[in-house]
Length: 143
Image 1 (cartoon, rainbow, N blue to C red):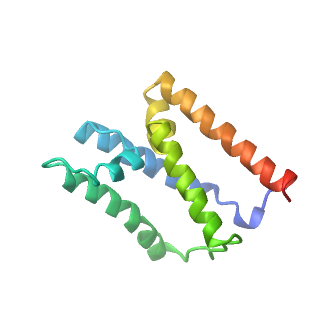
Image 2: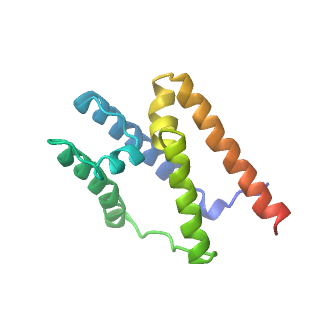
């Protein structure tokens, strides 16, 4: 295994992790809501009265964060090595997985494990094992 030391950014990664944890904690303490992105976005498809504002604010904050980063330093260049159809298919599979798993990595992996939820622990283990298996198959079997 080789570490890409040029792109190794432990301080930026730590800051990002702290901000994610802070955002999840503030949403839970202030609103009593779990910061699961798929649930927050999905709630906008069938909004309840008085439930739209905080959801939009949270999602706009997610979109505004990279703009805030740009004020501090340049974004790394984006490199997409796969066909758009493959990426769209992968996105649909992730969406389907969040539906079957009753949540996404942010809801289960960040918030659920922090609350010591057994269901979230199992879901996160399944996410990770599926990711490991997918990378292995794509890089070593199909390559």
